[in-house]
Image 1 (cartoon, rainbow, N blue to C red):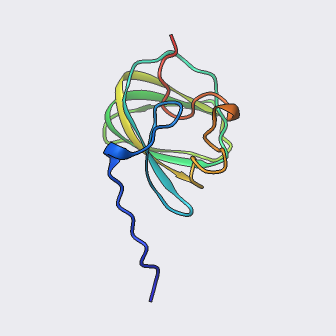
Image 2 (cartoon, rainbow, N blue to C red):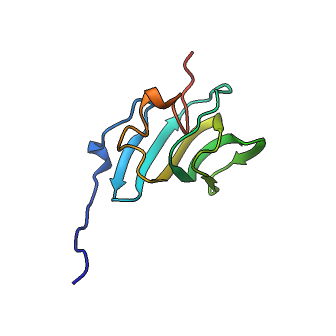
Image 3 (tube, rainbow, N blue to C red):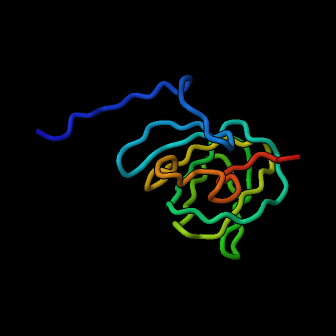
Amino acid sequence: MGDTTIKKIDSSHSPKGHCGQKYLASGKTVSMRLWEGEEKSDKKEDSVRDYETVGYVITGRAELHSEGQTVVLNPGDSWVVPKGAKHHYEILEPFTAVEATSPPAEVHGRDDESNGSCQSVQKSES
């Protein structure tokens, strides 16, 4: 018989990360997180992370700047940020998106403040 470990996560009880991300389901090699209602932000410093990120825009708009490229993210768009790529996001309109990270961002300190500025969608610090 195969692995029968199934997890259901009630997001109303999910922990939040230091940048406001809500951690959702997590497996051994991938995890999900939700950025909900992120407000408009100014350009941020580039981040480099030790995981790959894929995301999907639910509402709002943002720009993703990575390695000299800029893409506008609109509802229904999805994206990939490769592991180790320099990047940052600029929120253009209140933004909600789901991301998956591999390996999981929240384990082994990969998502810690000490590893750089808030990764992925960032709230303005002003």
